[in-house]
Amino acid sequence: MPYDPTIYEGSAAYYAAGRPAYSRELVSTLTREVGLDGSGRLLDVGCGPGILTVELAASFEEAVGLDPDADMLAEGVRRADQAGITNINWVRATAEDIPSLSLGDFRLATFGQSLWWTDRDQVLATVHSLLAPGGAVALINHAFEGRPQPPGPGYPPIPHDEIKALIDQYLGPQRRAGRGLRPPPGEPYAQTLTRAGFDRYRVVFAPGRADIVQDVDGVLANFFSMSFAAPHLFADRREDFEADVRDLLLTRSPSGRFWDWPGDTEIVLANRPSDG
Ligand SMILES: C[S@@+](CC[C@H](N)C(=O)[O-])C[C@H]1O[C@@H](n2cnc3c(N)ncnc32)[C@H](O)[C@@H]1O
Image (cartoon, rainbow, N blue to C red):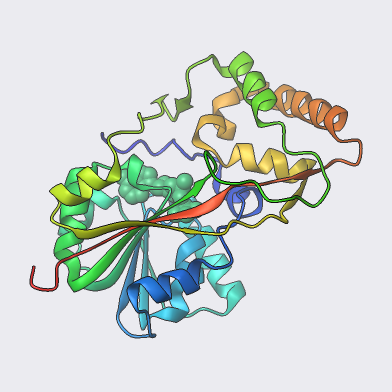
């Protein structure tokens, strides 16, 4: 699947504000599972605005945040500066380009909601070759389906289905992405990881944040941060879409506040064999 630079066109500025954060126990879970101790290097593939890179950088000597989208990387630089993190090297490239980059070796490679955009077989094989023996790959996503829902903070949930129905009205029923359509979910991770030479496949859940409250702007930012609702897709109907979402939201929550429950944080882990 060739990289389409328009998949997140206009989304970077909305990403960190709109997307729900991963579990507060993400770092401690990875520390326990991978044995992080401040040494070694992190490769965060498809890092976007550095959500994982910034959060995990302190657990390594150096972190590399790699993404082909310049606006996303600029957000990553800004967020790292704001957090006072100075050990991140930002690289503008696709994951498929990694073999030509001489990035060195790594203790952990992370993909936060990004593997499905890549040529998974090629990219996982490359990442396997860059990991130190015993090093790990972590595929990190929100997991909503089938996860128990905790009590919320008392606001109505974001009406995702109704907003998606509005998106259908504006953009058609098929999920768009850039100049084309969103890629299909693909085969289960276990198969792809095994084919790339990883072992010790396991799935760990870290408890999601049950206290995320978004206002109307935050809910809009969430959708504009998504490839299937990136601002450019609406072209000259963007203001109409925005007004329709605002009207809908205010009828669903007169206070204009919503509970954003993203589910738990799913961490799919596998290792390069110690003798591999
Ligand atoms: C949903 S965002 C994930 C951002 C961040 N990792 C997180 O956990 O929130 C997906 C990112 O993958 C990047 N991406 C898309 N195609 C890619 C490719 N072929 N190689 C590397 N990154 C890619 C996009 O530019 C985008 O920043």
